[in-house]
Image (cartoon, rainbow, N blue to C red; front, side, top):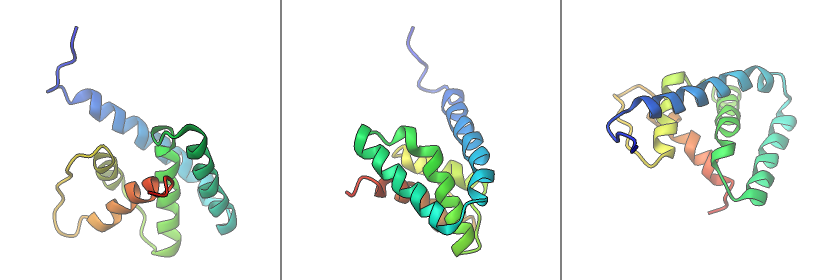
Length: 118
């Protein structure tokens, strides 16, 4: 049986699962030093070089970006902004109003895709 392309529940469930993973990682990453956070980032890059796949790295990359943003800018990505980043990462358009953090959202897929060096 074919999947109904108009059934958004599967996509929303996928995003919600990733948001949960990101939120779980947040507690661990908060306790790391800046150099440990950088080392985690390099580990992601090495994992990508081995597998050439970004999907397994999404949760950790988004969590790292969220923590780096909190430390450097004082801005923490909210769950709705994480969803916006996931939408952009899926090559879809995310509509957001003024002041909802579009620039912050864009950092999520940008940092994930940076591990490819492309």
